[in-house]
Each structure stands twice: as structure tokens, then as C-alpha cells.
Length: 122
Image 1: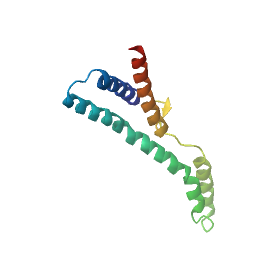
Image 2 (image 1 turned 90 degrees about the vertical axis):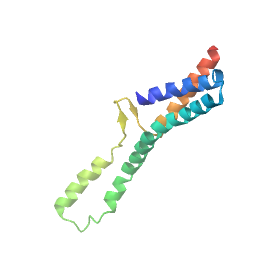
Image 3 (image 1 turned 120 degrees about the vertical axis):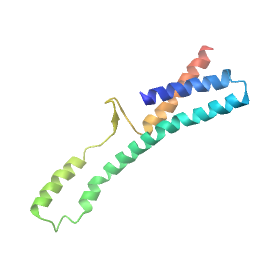
Image 4 (image 1 turned 180 degrees about the vertical axis):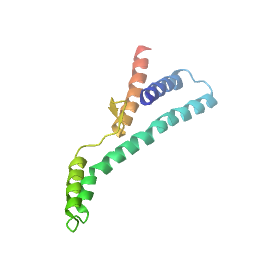
């Protein structure tokens, strides 16, 4: 919900900035608000992508450990762990969409689409 609401708020603020703001202080206020809205969502999306990239390197890190000199039980457990690490790990919000940088840029595109829709209707 936060990402959807962020896109809607950004679209509304852009429309308000272009068509209804008349004072310099209101212009500064809404510009700062417009910059703060994506900064609210960006860390979540950035670290979701960062975690996904780290999990992609996990299999190589498992293989790079000193597993040749370990016990048979360790090797069996390592094999199971390595097989489980081959699955792609993605942070998912509400079971609907991934929380990554693609979602962040989709939020920005959604805000622009809302702005373009309002401009076309006006």
C-alpha cells in the first residue's frame, strides 16, 4: 500500500505544483514534499535489491569455503544448503510484488502516468 500511495501522492503533488501553486513558499514546500516521497520508499527497494544480489552470490560463497577438508556430515549438510541456495530469493510485499529497484522505478512511472492523465483531462 505504501508504494501505491506514494505514487498517487507524487502525481497529485506534481499536478498541484504545476497548476495551483502561486506563492514561493508553497512552491518550496511542495517541492521538498515531492522529493521526500520517493526517499521514503527508496531505502526499502534498494535494500531489497541488495539482499537479492547477496543471495545470488551465496552459492559461490558456499563452494568457496574449505569444504574438502571437512567431515562427511558437514559435506552432506553443505550439499543440502547449496541446493537450497540455488533458488532465487526475492522480498515480496503482501505476496503481490517484489520490493526492489524495479518496483521503485515503477512507482515513479506510476506518478508520471497519473500526472499525464490529469494533464490530458484538463
